[in-house]
Amino acid sequence: TSAIDTLDNLKISATNCVYKNLKGIGKIWVDNLSLNESLIGLASQGVLFLTLAEIGKVNAVKKSTLNTDKSVAHKIKLFIDDNFTNQHLNLDLISKELSYNPKYISRAFVKNMKTTISEYINSLRIKYAYSLIKRNVSSIKDISLACGFQDPLYFSKVYKGIIGESPSQTINKIKKG
Image 1: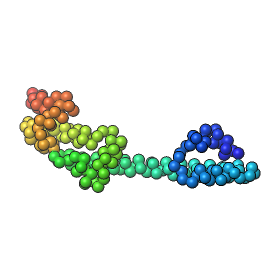
Image 2 (image 1 turned 30 degrees about the vertical axis):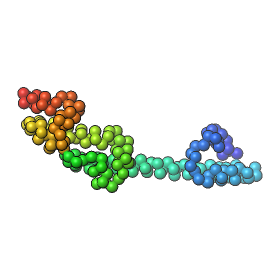
Image 3 (image 1 turned 120 degrees about the vertical axis):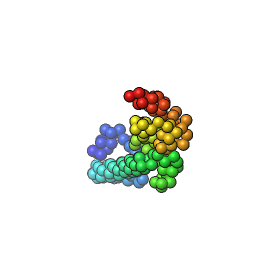
């Protein structure tokens, strides 16, 4: 009866299950609860331990999935870090290169990096653009192309959104010293 008391204390019942996908555990519980009173306590404890072990396995699989997502996010980050100046870099290219489904890599990246893939790419490109401006590169078209942007106007819009001023304003500030 100590197993039954434990379940009662934890408020676990048929209507308030801890985990509903434990195949076969319910039947084992029912079979063991129908034993005579002298065996029911021992059998119930055994089944409780079996149940908790199964829950542990489920949690281990979930944790493994989290680690896999983290690993995939890290691979994506490394790929982007190495290729952010590629004008064709996008979710489809990344998914093809890393052999993952685009939706999966997008979710894994956001979940682990707390930003979207396109936001991360743009942040790297704009940091690089800023470093080029600091090195006296003053052609917005050249900077945008070197950073992986195909359109200088779009580059300027993204730059202003991240830095808070246009590339031209940054160039003028740096020239003035």
